[in-house]
Image (tube, rainbow, N blue to C red; front, side, top):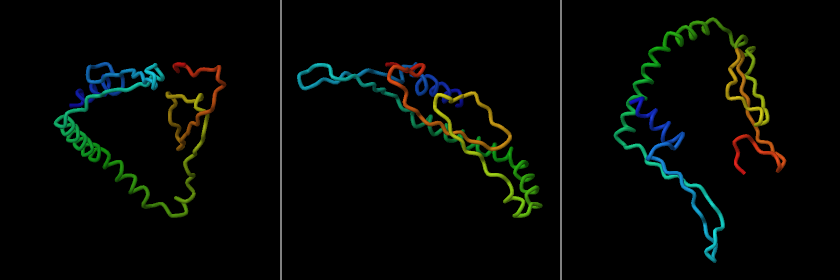
Length: 136
């Protein structure tokens, strides 16, 4: 089941490489019948209900397995927390929330020991600059 979902995701949803997805350019015409605009559309074949139901069953089974596998860790965490006072817990630092420009985005960045989240904002580029991979 995992392999079916992986293939469907990779060939149909993520990369549109199968006959289950049909990306098309649509030409819009003005009142005189002249090309006015080109717009993209994709026609995607939905996953059959029987396969989606099997995937839901697999997801539920994985949730149960993960719950069982992580239960000892959660139990140890609860035992460790039992000895902590409210003051000790309140002294823990909050997570760090930072921001950066979208051009600084790094998909390979790794998590640090301290909790931190970076939100990226989209800056306006001068009209003569192109973002790598962006079509004009």
